[in-house]
Amino acid sequence: MIDIFVKDETSRLKSVVLGSAESFGGTPKLEETYDPKSKQHIKEGTFPKEDDLNKEMTAVAEILAKYDVKVYRPEVLSDLNQIFARDIGFVIDDNFIVPNIIEDRAHEQEGVNYIIDQINPAQVVRMPEGAFAEGGDVMPW
Image 1 (tube, rainbow, N blue to C red):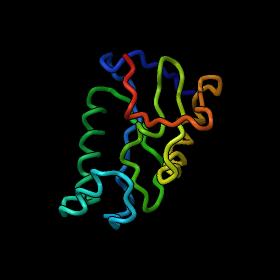
Image 2: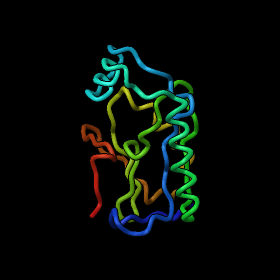
Image 3: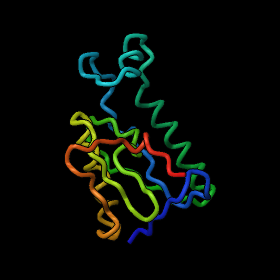
């Protein structure tokens, strides 16, 4: 079992789910994007490359390991952007929140199911139908 607890964003980090750039899917077509920043980077030719993202994510994982932070990574799903793992699940106090996210991103949750399966089911809260959030929009304080 994974013991979870997050009270705020400034306490010592003991474990984290770090996104993955493996099998990122490359640069999407402009009409396939749903967020303004991706559209901007595609238009400007600055959309990140998978190799660069993998190097950066590896460096972050190494730094976290240096400070004894347990790093969980999503299972790699082919040709799927899994960089923003916090958006698809987050912890408040001792509850793991599984949010409803936009349909274009729903498959990302499959990559973290093995992590959710290691958390006490009584601590897993699924948002009610019709309520939407992304973990990156939430800051426990």
